[in-house]
Image 1 (cartoon, rainbow, N blue to C red):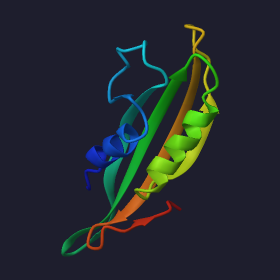
Image 2 (cartoon, helix red, strand yellow; image 1 turned 45 degrees about the vertical axis):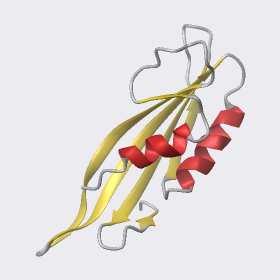
Image 3 (cartoon, rainbow, N blue to C red; image 1 turned 90 degrees about the vertical axis):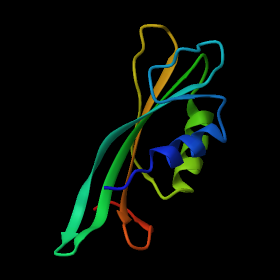
Length: 119
């Protein structure tokens, strides 16, 4: 398995002020961005050990107006580190905030550190 959580945080924190890996505590600074590692497992193994790792992240965006601009910024930040968006949907939110859910995936070659689009 390959830990890229620090890279995901750094990429998001470079473009947003309010980024957390927990439910946002700061609602005064919007958009609020939450990221969660949903999966991190061996994708391919050889007799010598792991050769490829699969990762999936969920990103939630809350804003008091449209989440579209923030979603484009998330796309750019995470694609720059090799993650590919596989899902994007507006989600109902009882707080009347705009809420978007996005998922990103990658297959990482453990030897070269390069990423591949999941099949």
